[in-house]
Every structure is written in C-alpha cells, then in structure tokens.
Image (cartoon, rainbow, N blue to C red; front, side, top):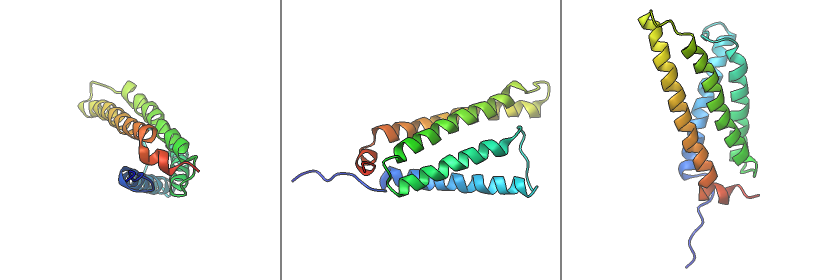
Length: 141
C-alpha cells in the first residue's frame, strides 16, 4: 500500500498560520492605536515598518490559504523581512543606550533578546518552509 502524502493546511503549517494571524492582529491593533493617538513607539517612523510587515504578512496568509504556488516565496520574504526589520529597529535602540542609567540598560538587554528570539523563530520557520514535505505537496499548482 502506497504511503499517504502529507498535504494541505494542517500540522505545523496550521500552527504557523495561527501564529501569523495572531501576530498580524496584534500589529493591526498597534497601528490603529498609533493612528488614534493611544500609543507611541520609541523609534522613528514605526508605522512605515509596521505597514510593510502587515502588507507582506496579509499577502502571505492569503497566498497560503489559497494554496498558491507563490505562498512559499511570500512567506519566506515575510520571514526575512522580520529578521531584517527587527535587527534595524533593535540595533538602533542598542547603540543608543546610556549605560549610566540602569533603566535604559534594560533596553539593551531587551534589544539583544528581541533580535535573538525573532531571528531564531524566523529561521526555524524558514527551514520549515524550505524542507517540509507538506509545503512541497501543498503548494505545487
């Protein structure tokens, strides 16, 4: 009896989509709070970075749900964007820390941990998108 192909939105791919949906929802709420003046960011022009991330993320979800053959590329682009933009944003904070202030010293630790965790998280999903049998079998059309 031939082995059943792993295919479709399920397993780790479903977990990825749930996680991406939650992240995009939080991002959308964040941008709305900034627009309505209920929140602010420490870095300059975060709205542009957040809007680009939301745009890439929503296209990645749409392409994945539609099982488009371009889903893999869109998701990989989104994940690389996350690494790049997190590094830029957090590096700015890290290099502008005043170490004479213990509270601001926490920004340094937060920046390093954010870069590390975002990169680790994204690299795990990049490897998944490149190596997964489910991805290969689902996004072939």
